[in-house]
Image 1 (cartoon, rainbow, N blue to C red):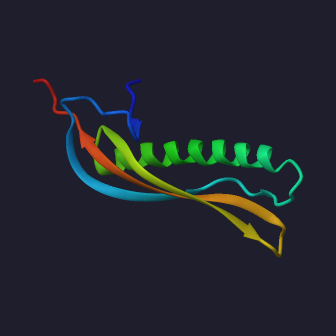
Image 2 (cartoon, rainbow, N blue to C red; image 1 turned 60 degrees about the horizontal axis):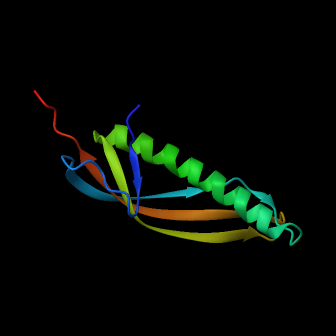
Length: 104
Protein backbone atom coordinates (compact mmCIF):
# COMPACT_ATOMS: atom_id res chain seq x y z
CA UNK A 1 0.00 0.00 0.00
CA UNK A 2 1.48 3.37 -0.97
CA UNK A 3 2.21 5.87 1.77
CA UNK A 4 -0.69 8.26 2.34
CA UNK A 5 0.35 10.46 5.27
CA UNK A 6 3.49 12.61 5.19
CA UNK A 7 4.65 14.41 8.32
CA UNK A 8 6.28 17.86 8.44
CA UNK A 9 9.60 17.56 6.57
CA UNK A 10 8.54 14.48 4.61
CA UNK A 11 7.44 15.58 1.17
CA UNK A 12 4.57 14.07 -0.81
CA UNK A 13 5.37 12.67 -4.26
CA UNK A 14 6.77 15.28 -6.66
CA UNK A 15 3.88 14.83 -9.09
CA UNK A 16 1.22 15.31 -6.40
CA UNK A 17 -1.01 18.34 -6.86
CA UNK A 18 -2.26 20.21 -3.82
CA UNK A 19 -6.05 20.34 -3.64
CA UNK A 20 -6.76 22.30 -0.44
CA UNK A 21 -5.88 22.72 3.21
CA UNK A 22 -7.80 21.19 6.11
CA UNK A 23 -7.69 20.75 9.87
CA UNK A 24 -8.60 17.72 11.94
CA UNK A 25 -8.67 17.12 15.66
CA UNK A 26 -8.13 13.85 17.51
CA UNK A 27 -7.87 12.63 21.08
CA UNK A 28 -6.01 9.82 22.76
CA UNK A 29 -7.57 7.27 25.02
CA UNK A 30 -8.27 8.51 28.54
CA UNK A 31 -5.94 7.21 31.24
CA UNK A 32 -5.83 7.59 35.03
CA UNK A 33 -4.46 11.08 35.65
CA UNK A 34 -1.89 10.32 38.32
CA UNK A 35 1.63 11.68 38.62
CA UNK A 36 3.00 8.17 39.05
CA UNK A 37 4.67 6.98 35.82
CA UNK A 38 3.87 10.33 34.19
CA UNK A 39 6.42 9.87 31.37
CA UNK A 40 5.11 6.40 30.52
CA UNK A 41 1.55 7.71 30.47
CA UNK A 42 2.58 10.58 28.15
CA UNK A 43 4.41 8.19 25.79
CA UNK A 44 1.48 5.76 25.68
CA UNK A 45 -1.05 8.55 25.17
CA UNK A 46 1.07 10.22 22.49
CA UNK A 47 1.46 6.96 20.56
CA UNK A 48 -2.31 6.38 20.77
CA UNK A 49 -3.02 9.96 19.62
CA UNK A 50 -0.71 9.56 16.61
CA UNK A 51 -2.30 6.21 15.68
CA UNK A 52 -5.78 7.74 15.87
CA UNK A 53 -4.65 10.78 13.91
CA UNK A 54 -3.29 8.65 11.06
CA UNK A 55 -6.58 6.71 10.99
CA UNK A 56 -8.56 9.98 10.84
CA UNK A 57 -6.29 11.39 8.13
CA UNK A 58 -6.66 8.25 6.01
CA UNK A 59 -10.45 8.45 6.38
CA UNK A 60 -10.43 12.11 5.37
CA UNK A 61 -8.15 11.50 2.39
CA UNK A 62 -10.62 8.92 1.07
CA UNK A 63 -13.71 10.96 1.95
CA UNK A 64 -12.39 14.09 0.22
CA UNK A 65 -11.15 12.24 -2.88
CA UNK A 66 -7.44 12.77 -2.38
CA UNK A 67 -4.49 10.42 -2.57
CA UNK A 68 -2.30 11.64 0.29
CA UNK A 69 -1.95 14.31 2.96
CA UNK A 70 0.97 16.39 4.18
CA UNK A 71 0.70 17.39 7.85
CA UNK A 72 2.25 20.82 8.13
CA UNK A 73 1.57 21.75 11.75
CA UNK A 74 0.29 20.22 14.93
CA UNK A 75 -0.69 21.37 18.38
CA UNK A 76 -0.94 18.81 21.18
CA UNK A 77 -2.31 19.67 24.62
CA UNK A 78 -2.81 17.58 27.72
CA UNK A 79 -6.40 17.53 29.01
CA UNK A 80 -7.67 16.50 32.43
CA UNK A 81 -11.07 15.73 33.91
CA UNK A 82 -10.85 16.34 37.67
CA UNK A 83 -14.21 14.68 38.28
CA UNK A 84 -13.01 11.33 36.90
CA UNK A 85 -9.26 11.80 37.53
CA UNK A 86 -8.59 11.02 33.87
CA UNK A 87 -6.12 12.61 31.50
CA UNK A 88 -5.70 12.48 27.73
CA UNK A 89 -4.07 14.31 24.85
CA UNK A 90 -5.92 16.49 22.37
CA UNK A 91 -4.31 17.20 19.01
CA UNK A 92 -5.11 19.67 16.25
CA UNK A 93 -3.43 18.97 12.91
CA UNK A 94 -3.32 21.21 9.84
CA UNK A 95 -2.67 19.41 6.58
CA UNK A 96 -2.75 19.82 2.82
CA UNK A 97 -4.69 17.31 0.76
CA UNK A 98 -3.03 16.12 -2.46
CA UNK A 99 -4.14 14.28 -5.55
CA UNK A 100 -1.73 12.34 -7.74
CA UNK A 101 -2.64 12.65 -11.42
CA UNK A 102 -3.30 9.38 -13.20
CA UNK A 103 -0.72 8.41 -15.78
CA UNK A 104 -3.20 7.61 -18.58
